[in-house]
Image 1 (cartoon, rainbow, N blue to C red):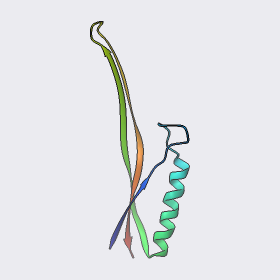
Image 2 (image 1 turned 135 degrees about the vertical axis):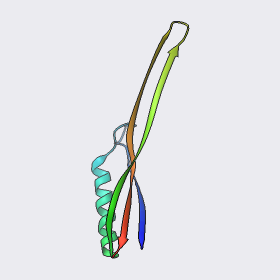
Image 3 (image 1 turned 135 degrees about the horizontal axis):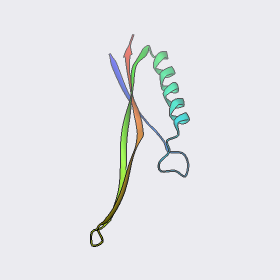
Length: 82
């Protein structure tokens, strides 16, 4: 029997761009321990990536600018009952 768990990443306090990787790692470790106690073993951990962008343009002057970035929104943990 498989179990699928989504773990949401959190941004560093005061940031809307930098993921708190240490906190995410602790969440993954905690879930892993709980799954092991229940007889599961982790098969895979898959990152979920999201992105954002911003653009501005002044077509009258032929000027435009823009940027985009991606970030880890969370991870999906797939575990299998031993």
